[in-house]
Image (cartoon, rainbow, N blue to C red):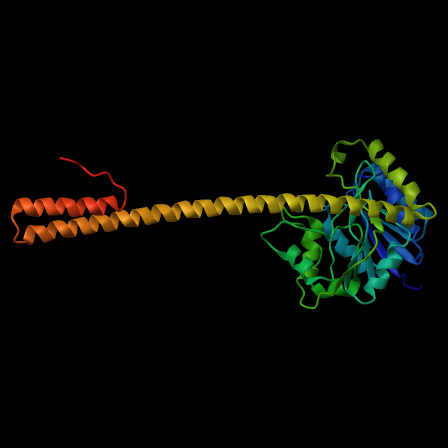
Length: 341
């Protein structure tokens, strides 16, 4: 049997309503020679039924019905990669969608790179598109995601692909994500740390994400999630789907550009305001230091004059009068009031 050109991994646990739409979008790729591996991590009964039906309906689908693993069952993704029949590993969440040219687009990038992603975007409930903008060909983008002092990620599960041989060469497989970390970010950093890492980001959005944790979707019912994904599934499977998404992407980029420019203007104003405030504070501190130094110098001169006249030959009354005169002059230098009488 000829090996497929791509293997698409779909981790799942309890999304029985949206799983069929996600898998269908994977099977509708322009590259038909592929396999879809549905990784069941302690699935619910309804997901089990759906998974078996999907595998029975299309021989390109395999359903792995596994016991619940630690966390999100990340270790099972390693097992699926080892068992995969192609050298191109793709990822798709069970409530996201792929556009028809997604696999074809990233296979072109994987021919020359170890790691590739669609231009990373997500769909808001109102239908507008936002972005996790990134360019994996820029070392600066990669270094940003490697920083331990900054919680930042621009490479998701859905829309990402890598070569199987590059993954196996890591000798550091998918494992249980440490507390407080993101599973995708935790794993992708293993690639990014390699001295010879090569990555690429597509110019097009060919994968659509519908984040559960964003815009209140975590409070939606399964029926609401299904309704949203069904509407977009109709778009993705219609003629000219990429053109429709490209138009929405352009609208989203324009909106983001306007907001970015406005935010930049506000930041510049705040920086200028804070810089002016800092200059005033520094000037006040210098003035206080100068005044204090002048007072200390005046006091030093006054003490010197007192010692001088104590040792002098002039009559006591004259010495006292001269000393008072000199001390008064010294005090006047720093603006201290002179005593009379």
